Length: 121
Image 1: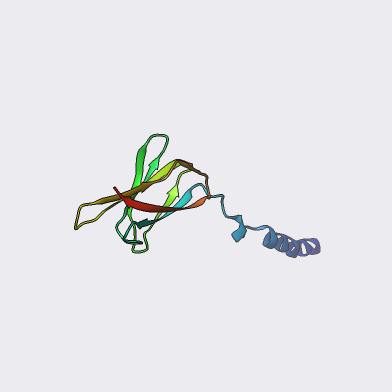
Image 2: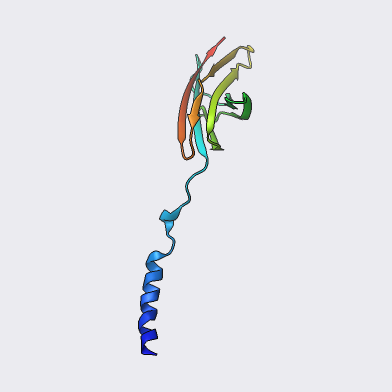
């Protein structure tokens, strides 16, 4: 019976140091893309329409309007090949400014930052 009492603290000690901890996070399966846009003659402004496209299918994945810092964040993006287009329409004149990127590849866990400078057509 004394042998069992001797093994119990050893078992508890072993479990304490082999159990899961915060470093056991699963591997990421998606990526994050941050786009910062500026418009010629206006600088950094809100309400720039930024669209993320899948390059393989040429299908729009998501469109978001930029915040007051010209930023848009696309989160939980599946690994693949993409491109981004941005469009701003000046409300007083109807003039359009746009920009786009070349194709780029993202992998799981990537955090890609893109800077776009929109120019009036």
